[in-house]
Image 1: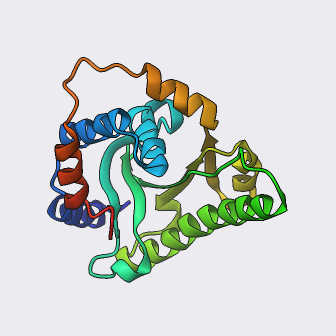
Image 2: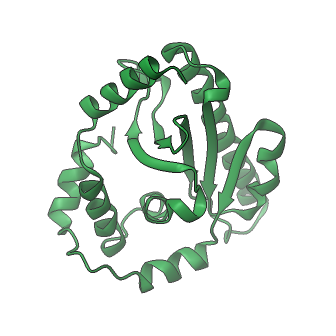
Image 3: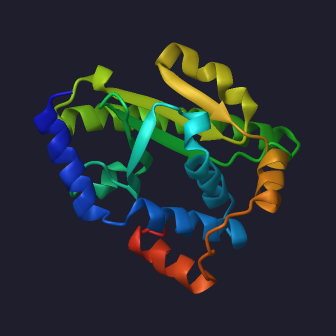
Length: 198
């Protein structure tokens, strides 16, 4: 990746999301304490276990923001990480209800599986075009609660990882941190800063 391109993008990230790593960690720890959103809980697991799931990721640059300046209608990316080798890693998450039964639920699950891959691949293309980066400078991953996504990334150059709903819940219950959790009010305040509701 050309250093100037990377520098411009990192500067953009710092401007639109100035929170520190510690701020974001405290936010996600607060999510664990107040698990009012299953998607956010999945994202908390990803962020707090990023080294095990996607070991090439070094630093979070964007969370729930558009990687394309002034074009929020083109979609937000759940996570954009800087890798240790100086490339970018885009990750989309999706909480997929694998416990619901019936034909309608099977169709819904399949739709969600397809959509999460479509989202990250589309963002990769738009990202490359807008920031003038080669496609091989951008890596993609998806993280869901459905192990069925594992094989789907093989042919489209997307790294697929998952955790079962049961294991996610076990992790939530057993998670302990030496740092003080955010209050519910502080979690809501941070949520507003990163525009999760928009």
